[in-house]
Amino acid sequence: MLNNKVSLNVIIIFSLLLLIGCKQQVKELTLEEKIALAVESRKIPTSKDHKVNFTVPESIIGRGPQITEVLSHMENYIPTVLIEKGNTKTTKLPENISHTLGQEILTSAFFEKETSLDQICDEKQINGVIVLHKGQVIYERYPEMEPSDKHFLGSVSKTFLATVIAHLADEGKLNEQDSIGQYLTEFNDKPLANVTIENLLRMTSGINCREMDKGSFTDPNHCFYKLLQHSAVYTEPNPGSKESLMELLANSGQIEPAGQTFDYTSANSVILTTIAERVSSKPFHELVKEYIWTKIGAEDDARVTLSSTGVAGSYGLMLMRLRDLARYGLAFTDDATTKIASARYLNQIHTGDRTLFRSEVYEGQGADFQSYHWDVIFDDGDFYKGGFGGQGLYISPSKRLIIGFFSAGKDETNNNNNMKSLVRSLALLEQFKE
Image (cartoon, rainbow, N blue to C red; front, side):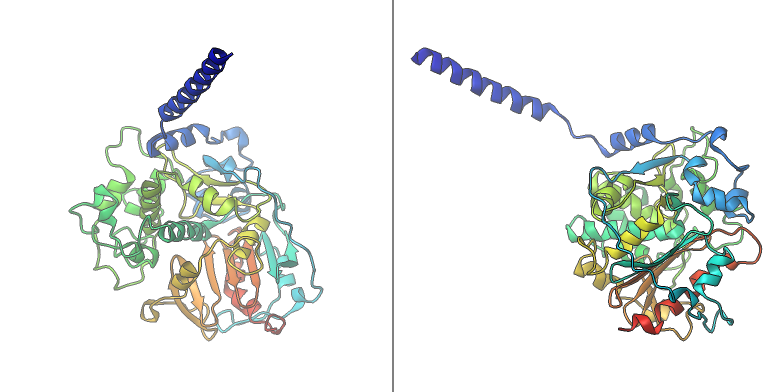
């Protein structure tokens, strides 16, 4: 009997040692391997997926009725990878629909005329809009899209990147005062090596890859045009291209010293994304999943574009449902079950340099400065981010107010940007001053 017990104990110990040994042999995938797997998992659209003729750059930066289709279903036109919600429970958004909000007069010094939410929707100036107050949906309409569509976010995507950066800083994996050169060897001995993460977040790096240059979207020789190629928005460079995207940006040079001028360009965001990926050893879509998407109670997966070389469209090419964008905004407020912004991050958002700020749109409405990849921080603590084509997210922690909207430049009127011009007017209505 004793020998049997000894034998059994030996078998158990041997099994445990074998199990431990097997676990130790399981090698953690490298960042490069994770990116390669993501590239393999992409949804790669074909012409059969296209409902409209798709050409670049016209189908991205042009105007016309086809633009609404492209921005509402971009996964059918550009390769994307999933940002999965996994088995997380969907956070319900209670409805308390206002029967008067849509009729309230909206105007501003910049807009110079009067309109209303109902008029904006009735005239199909936007694709969709949602307003949350105190955690409840009080206004929601979809004039030019289905509620289930994963719509293009434009540069509102940059706030997801900023939130990822903030989480990594909270965890001590990076610091906003660290330089690019500390993380990216491609920038060693280059003019941008000493530019800080904070400079990138505040769009004051001085990088010579300007998004607002004439020809930045149309000149194949322009640095920004090449950035769009590397990220698969435009036709990608030949597979044998010797210069990677980071090498392109490192070699682009610097127009002026960092910290002197606000100069908006997604090149800053691309560099930030690479830093985030390398310090965490995780691709961008996994970082968004970990820090945001599995925390907000999303009702569906999101998507982000991904090139064949693993460059994510973190700077402007995320796709999601409008209600999930609202849930993301809600997670910055006390109405959320789980908040995704630490006190430190919120303090960073509310810290900026007024001398660098430029905004005519919100003149006389308390616009203070831009900060941490958010376009406007207002004097009452509200903050806002807009995106190409007429996308927007407005967050007011104090008013417990979230405004999200999608649009597309379907004609030459520029009406698709009206909501961006009037979102602050909407937030300043008396009913939200309780």
